[in-house]
Length: 101
Image (cartoon, rainbow, N blue to C red; front, side, top):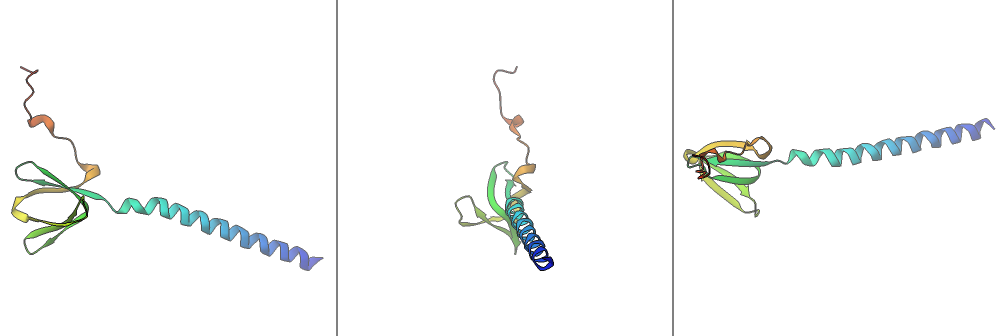
């Protein structure tokens, strides 16, 4: 009788460990893809380039992967700012609006 109770108790612990492991893996899968961020490179002329992943600085140029998945390059002298896409603020204030006089 005691062995049966111990066996059911052991199976209960194993089941609980599996449930906890499964839930923690599912939570990790949902949270960790946020680490692969998109970045925006703002050039000196005001134009913006969206990148997949953080651009890398190599020998005076920034190397990055563009939205189509192709490798692209920008000289460092043309770059004003590199920031995560979530941190970028829209800057449409420089455009002319004829309704405002």
